[in-house]
Length: 241
Image (cartoon, rainbow, N blue to C red; front, side, top):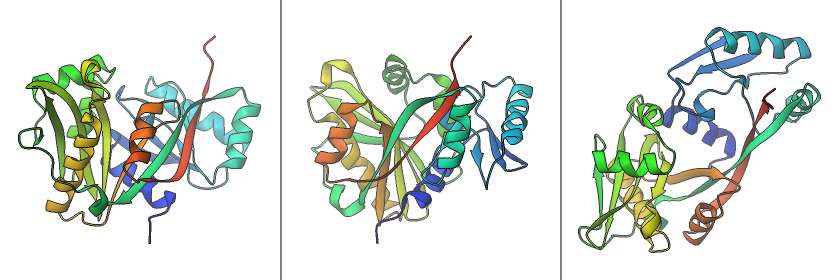
């Protein structure tokens, strides 16, 4: 049976981890170390009242972090509460999943590789796409099996990504294709390489990926690979000023 989005929320947490997690009241809070919303957002463990939002805000302010809240499928009441307190929707995200076997297709010789630690040229591709050293540091925090993905096209560095495993599910993060090589099937080859690596590391059941709803290219790629949209989440943050 295809894993539900609740299981995949856990996979996201474990394959793209915060520097620190702790609980206060109804919240799970995260110290992201400037690694982005996903590793910085607070999530609710159970029902939340208006006063609880102030508690989370204080906890995040104490570590110098802008208040962010992750809103999952079961968080409708929290979503309304935050909207009433002036929090805007940010970065709606779609969660995709497929059987590993569907994507585990051999790639052309010398077109894709798995590398740990990431090479300087991979870091350059990520940086050009807005994925800086703080997000690369997230990858190094993963405790389980992990690898970076690297693709070449026309004998040039063309793309990179990151894949990690939780149980029998592999998840791909930070998939980035260099601008000159977009629409050249590089993203597809990177996903195939991720699935092949997952199979060789005992994640033989499912592979997943997440991307913002506005990233039409990535969503189209995952659809073309036969991946299923199994859920979503978004963030709430206050507008500056």
